[in-house]
Length: 290
Image (cartoon, rainbow, N blue to C red):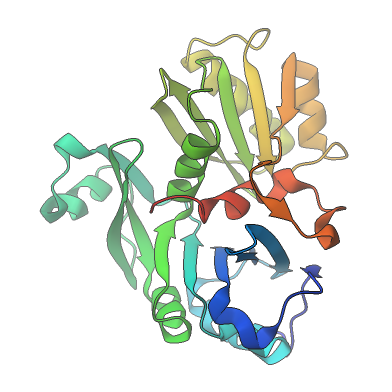
């Protein structure tokens, strides 16, 4: 474990004041490869901060509390009270259940159908209001306890909950069967498809090589009876034009683009050189009713 940790991305608007954090809201995304958070000023409707940390080698949930403490040592205001804080835990241990079929007393059974038992984890669920669905998932106990220790008012959700709800809000009445959303992460990716402004498909895929990546993507497109020549792939997450995965997409899928910035929000000029599609969910999840 390192003795210190520094962000590989760090931007704070000149208006940010660490003694005013109760005026701000924060959205945070954690996986075992890193942590990213954005700071939003509701009165100004403005994103005023972004910090992202890479952990190097993949960590275990038990390592996370110490990493949080290291970040706190580097930036004391990290754990100050915020007006609102949404914490998105990112893993592939989740399953979606339509609300009419969902009974919270059976949440263990739902998750047990397609996920192995996880020690030192609790089973929790989110309600996705815009798609009338429950998201049942494993939440690591060390992570949940540390988050609540730092921020008692934190609202903990699964990352896929924030992703789906952000897309529903950002693309309300603009969703088409040919719009397939791709959110890329270090070793996995999310795919989301809507039909008639309703959630039609969501899945998460783990990959090890760029060949795995494109194989799973094209297989999913075929499974959904879509055509690589006509599907409109909207991309976000850990992907840019220098990435080999992007080259594979460009080679096999005719119509693709990075997701556009939400023009209903204002952004600090300090973020002008940050690729907005990399942090779309964090920028927009604070606008959702989770």
